[in-house]
Each structure stands twice: as structure tokens, then as C-alpha cells.
Amino acid sequence: MPSDEAFERADKEHRPSPIDVHVGSRVRLRRTLLGMSQERLGDALKLTFQQVQKYERGVNRIGASRLFDLARVLDVPIGFFFDDMPDTMGGGGQARIRLTGFAEQQEGFEDDTLHKRETLELVRAYYRINDPSVRKRVFELIKSLAPGE
Image (cartoon, rainbow, N blue to C red; front, side, top):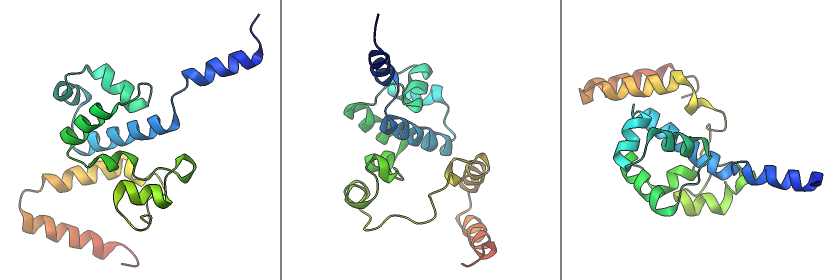
């Protein structure tokens, strides 16, 4: 009969890596911000929407060539997928500088604000404003309403 240690090892082997989960969540975030369905992203990558779901949940690892394709289709630099990675997973410090080019960690994004439906709907609505001058006025209005700015 297998030992408890063997069961624990087998369980760990089937659990997604926290890094894969983080990268997948960044894929989902960007796809959602663009208003793109999993099916449409899958079509662009010649994948099924189920494969996209597995990438987004971190169940399937994203290889280098696939990450490159995702960055191209989602119109982001590859470092985007590693942004906001917790320090416990190697984010912050020198790793962050190498991946994003920022000298210091961005403030104000430690919470889950970017993942809230309200934030996503606001960003989508903002980018649907076609007139650049109107969009700029909306941006200035929102900034003026925020405390401490």
C-alpha cells in the first residue's frame, strides 16, 4: 500500500504551479479587458476554448512559443504575464526589474482591483468612447473625483 508521502507527492504533481496560475490569470485579465471570448482567443491561436480555459486556470503550462503567440495576439509585452507576481513566487525586486523594466514596484495594485468586474466594465466602456477629446475629458473627470490626486 502506498505511503502518505507517496500520496502527497502525487497530489503535488497534479496541482498547478502558482506561477502557471498567475500567468494564466494575467492571460484571462488581458483577454477580458479586450472584451475577447475564450473562443476568439482560441481561434487566433488555433486552439479550442477548452485549451484556453486550461491555460487560464494554470492547469496546462504555457510554453515559450505559446507565450510569445499570446503576447502578440493580446498585444502586450511578454513581461505583462509576470507583472504583479507576489514576492513569494519570485516577483518584486530584481526579477520585476528584468521582466518589466520598472525600477521599483508599482504602488496601488496589491489588491484585486484589476480583477473586479466593475473595473473591467469601466475600462471597456472607456475604450468604446471613439472621440479622443471626449475620452480625455472622461479621464480627467475620473481623476478629479479620486481623493488625494
